[in-house]
Image (cartoon, rainbow, N blue to C red; front, side):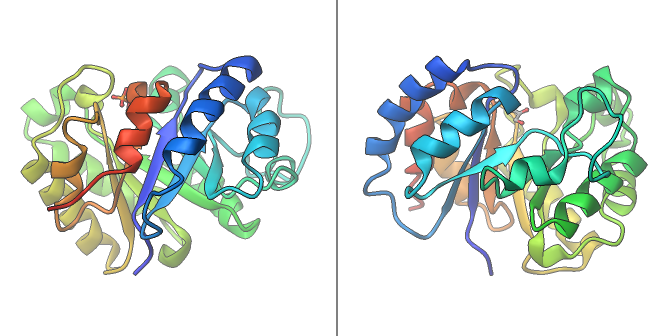
Length: 243
Ligand code: 13P
């Protein structure tokens, strides 16, 4: 079984100067964090190099917020795996609900991105999750199952993280009940058929709910948005304690 993965997704936040300040506060706060968990931050592309330089030799790993399936070419605005590898990036978030919504990313494209990540030694963090309307229509499980079946097709589950992020819980302050998040993560595990798959929960994770979430049997980490922008909050999340 891999270690739980605690990841902060900075989204479209953080200049290099802000990343430097954040790291100056954060790194001392994880000096005594137990080694039983993996700590990851996903800066915007422009802050990856600065973050990589400052974190080199530390235990904080870097994720990108995207990766393309081609090695190079005419793909304006995209990023190639080799460009990430050059900076020691270890993870790549793909299939987040924001590009799914704003750029109409399909499960097929997400699958291409995730396969490309694995082919280049990156660990994809593949996000899945239902909208409010889908949940109220009773379609949550069907939607997530389709995202899992199409998005994860052909991937090696031993070099993969799946993040269950219900869209209605992202940036809203409404966390999914930990028992319900755990139930969905358990379903994802059974659909993938890989007992050791790392499955994160994401959506309004905060210092106040991290310990309860990490105490759940099928939640192996978290993907944190807003609360990861504050170094002290994210350090508290990284230092979660399970009773
Ligand atoms: P929040 O933690 O701000 O709800 O965002 C979650 C998320 O989208 C992480 O990828």
